[in-house]
Amino acid sequence: MTIKNVAIIGGGTAGWITANHLGKALEKEQIQITLIEDPDTPIIGVGEGTVPMMRQTLQHFGISESEFISQCDATFKQSIKFVNWLDKHQHGENNYYHHLFDYPFPFNEDLTPYWLNKTEQSFADTVSFQGLVCDNFKAPKRITDKEYEGATTYAYHLNAAKFAKLLKKHAEEQFGVKYLSAKITDVTFSEDGSIRELLTDKAESLPFDFYVDSSGFQGFLIEKKLNVGLIDKSKELLTNTAIAVQVPTEKDRIIPPYTISTAHQAGWIWDIALPERRGVGFVFSNNHLNTDLAYQKVERYIGRSLDELSPREIKMRIGFREKFWAHNCVAIGLSQGFVEPLEATALLLTDFSAKLLAERFPRDKQTLAPLARRYNEQLTEVWTNTLDFIKLHYCISDRTDSDFWIDNRAPETISQRLADRLAIWQQTNPVRSDFPSKIEVFDIENYLYVLYGMKFKTAPPELDLNYSNRAEQQSAQVNQMAKKLAEELPQHRELLVKIAKYGLNQI
Ligand SMILES: Cc1cc2nc3c(=O)[nH]c(=O)nc-3n(C[C@H](O)[C@H](O)[C@H](O)COP(=O)(O)OP(=O)(O)OC[C@H]3O[C@@H](n4cnc5c(N)ncnc54)[C@H](O)[C@@H]3O)c2cc1C
Image (tube, rainbow, N blue to C red; front, side, top):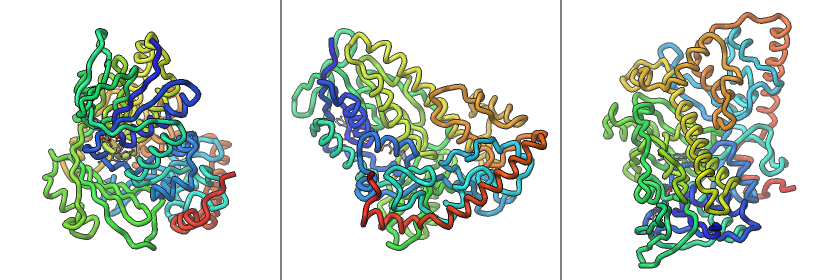
């Protein structure tokens, strides 16, 4: 009845992030982890934007930040800069706001009521010094800062294929994870419906006690073998296709320390800068825009023909599993579900799910059922929250230039919980008790940056004079600090060159 042998199906970033989390958590126990990958099914190879949780994860695995940056062509990400998400006639051509990674209010007082009364400066610049750092293309840290520490909060942009390779090497060398190159063609079941063994194309049978399905969109175990369906969310999030392309850049080009997300008539374009190329992708709804036109939009955006750039067209199935853990199998990664990549949620959810599994890994088969119920409950909550947060970006936009934007505001496409929150926030600004869940991956800070970056209208509250004076002072301090940091921090590319040459301070 004990669980001693674990199989992970799939060698994409999800499989290897899970292998490292489980490897680290079970390091001192007699549990063998084997990752099996079909050599003929390539990994999806997109997924270049991360969020700050990745920093803690890499440090937890024991990977050196300098090594990670050099080996994965990583750059620093401090924000997502949303361009043209508001009506250009009202807010100007190329209107933008930052969803920053630094927590707002560095002096701990909520400056939102103050800002609502006094709106000359952007919300982000009133409550954080990071916007100016970003606008000046500055790095979040100096070469003398310790690994994984910085003057501002940051995540990374990275080369997805190189990242999977680094994670593989680390899991094998540090945690003794075994790697097997084989295509799983079928499984056999025990009487209770759990998976007994995997069958491969070489006619082997491989029995394990516990299985992680990281086989990508198809969900080989969770969907094809265990028949767990996907809860379709395509009526809430309307985009369903992506065209992804990599554009080589000059070696001395400025590297923005943020992802650029530019809204278009039927979706948006991501633009992620690595040292020698940009990853660009158009995410759109093919119910609102003809695919040929979408290709033309990408060409117009990058300013060159796609002929020599081998663009990839990827269909996106928006939704999440009815269950994430069924019997002795857990789905992690794209097999778990997908929401469009607007806030780099996929690697976040993968990391979150793998960590949750590692923290509560079943040591025997009796605990499978209670742990599965707990896992399914928590992940359903996290996915539902994530969906609401992505939807927020669309449904509070005032763009009316196409059916796509108008359809996105239709009440039937907005969950009741999000609609209720928005109704409340028209009267009073968000407060922490609006976010009661302890496992909210997008919390009040994220909502504040997006809501007020998008000029959501909350009635300005009456201000007490003492608060008003304090807020005025703190906002002036934020501005001073922003100027100081924007001057002192190195240029983003300059720091990356130094890291490649000298490495970061490891002590
Ligand atoms: C357009 C787009 C943009 C994205 N952008 C971002 C982003 O900016 N940030 C972010 O966090 N995420 C992003 N993602 C998501 C991200 O790409 C994925 O979450 C990540 O790459 C993990 O994928 P995966 O490992 O689950 O699947 P995959 O990379 O598809 O790997 C599947 C693995 O399963 C193996 N396999 C499949 N079938 C079998 C079988 N029968 N037997 C054995 N092995 C098998 C394959 O060989 C492969 O190794 C994006 C996704 C898309 C579609």
